[in-house]
Image 1 (cartoon, one colour):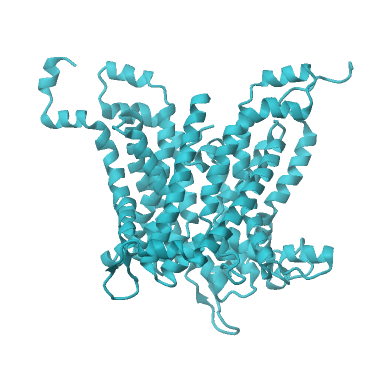
Image 2 (cartoon, each protein chain N blue to C red):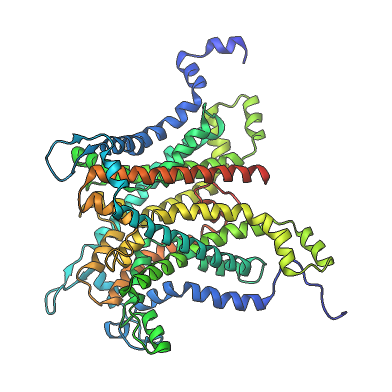
Length: 290
Length: 303
């Protein structure tokens, strides 16, 4: 018994690391395999049995942006550069807009509650949880009448509204956590409400704003149905373009499909690492903090 | 505030001071009313009309006929059944897999953070991407999964050909994607268990099962319930994954209610009917969301 160290509760050793590494890699494998496939030549991607070791090539990534649609034909622009720009621009602008409006509203809901505050918050969450199709039909009709369909301002407005409930719930949960003593002290000293908001509250939720922005960007970047039904060719985003490519001319050019997906996934995988501490809050729309 | 200060305020300043709450939230409310509440009311109106968005014909007011038609339609009920099968099996498996993953990550060990992020990645990906690469893995000749199964059984594996196989294939992708969500919630529960309880149990030499049942479970029970509700709401709306992996086939065996509403609205263009069906779905989601928030608040009081 002397030689057996008392095991510390809550800690596991390197054995657990080995076990967890194997399981995690198996879990992550579908993503890893797509990334590998993106670097394979046409023949390697279709090899039976699957090749784990191969000569990497970048040809698929070139084909994403420009390729020939039939054998021997000249390579033409596929428009994917525009679709990537659209995805980045629409996601960026709408998240920024939702963040500005949403943070102010969240501060209001947290610090100057209205009558029936909880009811407002419930309705706001419901607008996020409801089956999207039910609002898409009227928005479809609205966009048709106003000519917003297939325009940048239409898409940005749409996605700002899409991000707003999430932003409000997230930011309210961050504001709710701040200690009020500092604000009260500042108020006693005669600070204006503007000063309290900008100089005291906002700096304290900086990390929260960043996490909310990243989650919003991922959600918008991934969104498919709104973009499919309300966008047009000029404002087409990557998910829609990707789905059309799969259903269209791509056939069994798995390497090409994998290259599109890799370009689409890499930003998400990278920023996911930035979210570590706010993950739980983010995926539950700010309803569960820890 | 002293009376003197009050008189020095201009009318506008007093207005701002009195209505701070409403003023702060009004821009957000405005956007939500414009893009969510107004469309919702419009949908509600549409659900009482016989209207097709692709025809020029004037809408006809038909009272509750759309609701009556939808609720007595055997097709709708069979889509609800399909959805129920997806929700039941998928959520159950997500709970199981998520729970096991949480147990693996419960204790601290070197490299835990990095590995955790690898496992959390799937749920950050888009349904379209997940759908697309599972479609590729299920492809009968070249698909990775099909080849693996063929190597073991010797039979060609064409999983998307049969209804059961197609349902299983979609559930597999969905469970892969969302088990980490359950894992996160369970982990949050596991972390909240006070350490001294485990120490006491160790002194008492309590068995693993007893320790789990009397110490661990009470702390994760609330979060498990929230996980089930949240995933039920989301799986109930299952659309993208089905649409991309099987498009509802073979036949209509994997057509969930989400896919069906989409077809009614944007392929058959029976707009009024789809609005009525949408409202029935909305009702279910509102009830579930209410329940979810009720348990969120109850848990917030306990913690």
